[in-house]
Image 1 (cartoon, rainbow, N blue to C red):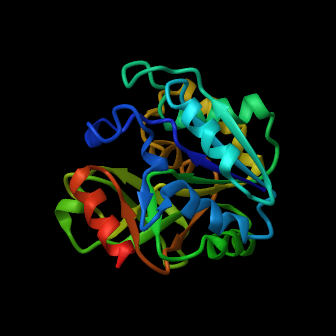
Image 2 (spheres, one colour):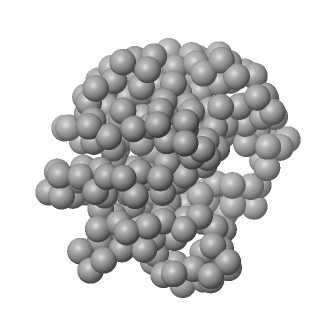
Length: 244
């Protein structure tokens, strides 16, 4: 399979820190967020290639970072050609852009490039192999207010996905859906259909919500914590935590 890091956003909520610098390359505990993700993928045998999709504005930064990188597996940068937050593709269109540009026909592990975790995604790869379906991820979220700002999972006792609510006023469960997915190769061809049928392109969860109504999917429960770096306060808090 391929590992894909979504890193084409403009991170306007972290201005001025990210006005001229990409969020995935910000350091957390002395290592870039992106490196923390790729170091885990590097150790997963099933992942044979790393792909990072970014925008034209920050592409030179990623080229410089790549020249300094020493990953054993192939590392591919994809430029989506956008230049600002106003003309951005959004995560789903970026995903399709990568699939069509590189003509991908293998399973795809997709991770948001602005999250830090304290566990390995090898468990997700193994889980998806056992279930033989595309998979999303979930974690228990006790806060109703937090659930109203994220995707919320509705699943059966075996964690087969029945539906995903997007930022619901009345959450149907306490299972939040973070931006980590493993899509089977057989499902990748559905993404163009999703966009044609009005699937939202900005948030990656929109695709999972569309797909789960058309193909079997399961949810893997995160075995640890994930930290979403959304604004300056969250970045400062995560940096302190991982620098301790």
